[in-house]
Image (cartoon, rainbow, N blue to C red; front, side, top):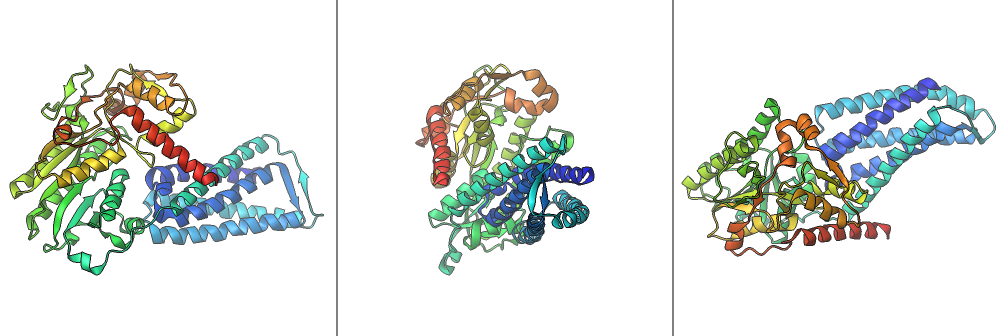
Length: 489
């Protein structure tokens, strides 16, 4: 049985990595309505694995129980084949995920080949579950089983939540001649909400996405999805562009290759948008382009940063934002009004920085980073959408706009407020030096900050839905609890 258990361990480790890295962090399946069927298949498969791991850890399945175990393993094969078909239908898998799925299939095939004669022998014996001593394998396999069963439950919750989300209805043919709003980064955390908000208003939307199948499954027939701006004919009437595209800045260390990727994913798409505007027969009236408060660099002395404050050449986060804004401003020469929104950390329950921080806070692991005195500019996702819509509609608004809430706490205050919203305390402290050693300059996103003031938004008359951190966190915590209560019923 040692060989069988070794193969099960390999299966458990590879499966856990596939779930965490590909399904959660990369594809973000639990946040995508188009992934509901795939998640349902994952739920069933992981429940079967939970039974198999724990069942083989402690018992010998004899007689009819051997037939039951064989049926469960056969059902897993059918579910996996259905999962392959669903993945090909709903999304484009990256190469590494395909390789990992192939290795998982080979490993599972070897496991079945070795288990088959064992099940045959067990099937010849009287029907009963015979308790056996598998030594240290028993607690290890039990841990695998508990983990995969918990993941099955997590996916079940996501399936039920996604089932309550509606896909935008197809827009009538009469609307196809109406001016459209082009949204880049449409499948992202903020982009999805912007598209949904525009559709609720009856606006025609064009979404740019690298993954056509995934975006079409997410938005439905009500949105025209393109994977290349060249696919948009010159006669298309685009009244406004919302540019939210770009690789995630906080993640991998800023190596030379990573910097090129970050710069290219933002500057490149902005250049292509300006090229699109040049060839359109009718120019858009406004470009709303996402930048970030990193434009101001690290300003830990508490000096207020208004839209008139200067960048810090030589700091990558500042250089990145300045380069994107420079390209966006080229549209001004075409007669397009350009609004450059400099976002702080956007807080929302669905994705972004909040979910992981909220989970840590709920478990009592809220942490102060470094000195904790660094300013932490933030914005509720409701206000991120609100400011984008405000920028689209206010003809007098142009230039840089700090997209942050009026209340800018220190990081220690934010960590404590987040913990308090769940009835906990932030008692941990992470020294600065390990973060700087591991993440290099990227650690400035966590250990340095800017005391950013939304002067332009306030002067233009924007009214924040969540102006204070306490109000925003209370709203997010209430939404989190409401979601769990509805699942309980």
